[in-house]
Image 1 (cartoon, helix red, strand yellow):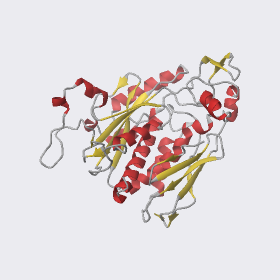
Image 2 (cartoon, one colour):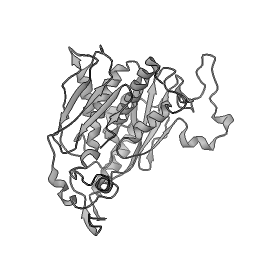
Image 3 (cartoon, helix red, strand yellow):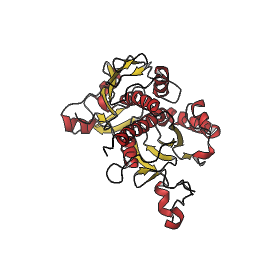
Image 4 (cartoon, helix red, strand yellow):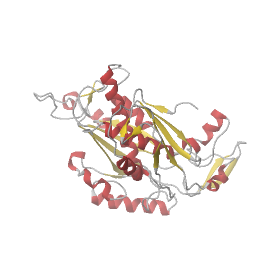
Length: 354
């Protein structure tokens, strides 16, 4: 199975399965001499871990990261940073009923057809648990990118959409509620809605908005290494993501060019920022902002019809511990992937390799 490495210079290779002994990764290309706050890395993991509130999966995992290389006396050495997060609360029997059948909208069917074999326990390698490794690497990238601010938050759950622009919001409120929405009133409504969906044995999707501030001018190249294209690829690599838009996004098609153009100030900044901080594939120093759409979690705790390995129609039902809405736990994952992209492009700009 290929495709386990992300990045060109600042590279993460992740390993492990949902119900294996551990998940982890090797982060290669991180410069030497970076003072790391290991406690802050654990804080980022705790934001992603299961069982943190009533509106997420109740799988109980401490998600404690252990580092094995690449760090000495609290600083990066420039060598590969190896780490692991041990799985301690697997319940593989929750998946025995799908050993010979395929869950709709999961990777089960295509895995079997592509590889001739699959780990049915929690989806194996396709499980969203793999993203914990990304959060560790992203937390390191954030500390490498000292000065760049990365804030993601839930802006929509189902039809419930936050209408305020990000400049009207107080990012300090993101972590004050389990939904991770910076608007207190909307957060309460979203939380109640997710709980009602959970009682139905169903799931709901949502949108995460991410804002990157203090990004320097000049990251990215104008052809195949566009900064916004790399961000899009990073976000679309996250489980359950179905859409990515930056700047004006799809709303921009409703405007005329004279309305959409970002007029310059004398210092090179722009009066508006419909470009979303990227022009010609290169960061222009303005805020970079984008939306990431997540589908409803495919595992529903209701009876459903599917097919088995023999192509026969069968009826089964979702079991186990699953998120009724994935977006609250996905916030730190979106931030981590954004940080990995910015770290990679920062090193590429330094070496003039693109």
